[in-house]
Length: 108
Length: 114
Image (cartoon, rainbow over all chains, first blue to last red; front, side, top):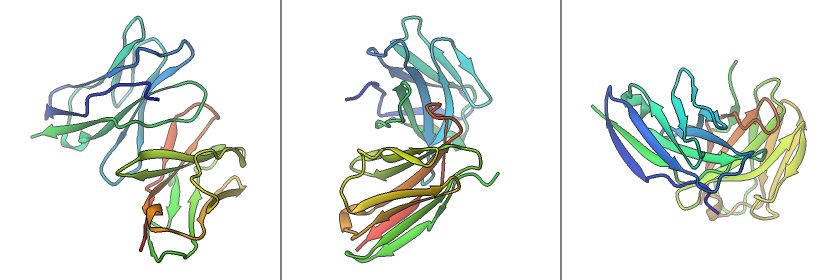
């Protein structure tokens, strides 16, 4: 029961912005959009989350469309260390369910 | 803060043996989660606790799996008897507030059952 759709893989040049899209057309009013990433051989790492407003922290920005049916995670200046699988998760007050995510490769 | 601490980091055992994985959550976090990751099935939620009480264990694959949280600073995931298909990386995570979903994951325990 996939609530999100993400491209399986993306490439990004080092130093450029990485824009990772996520479609969640069936999102409910009380569900948040969460982004996590998993660097090879490590546990998943929380990045950011939002309900309907755009959010920014030290790691990334999250842009949510006005109809909330899609969002974009932006890494403003990607580095090689940002190479990872990025998970977009739509969830309410229940535990996280991880899909397949997007494998982002940052290329020198 | 040392983060979520899991042990052992690697375990190799033979089919039929008992396996115990351990987790120490971040102090003050009151929710704890056990996930399993395989290439075939990805990350799966096995069980989670709030304030040391198991809330949902519907992800536990079989009766061979059991999890306990005797106090706020310790949890175990036990597999008895182990089978080759249990080979996976098992992650423990903790969350400061129930339902917040801002999880901190441990480094994982890689289990290989021969």
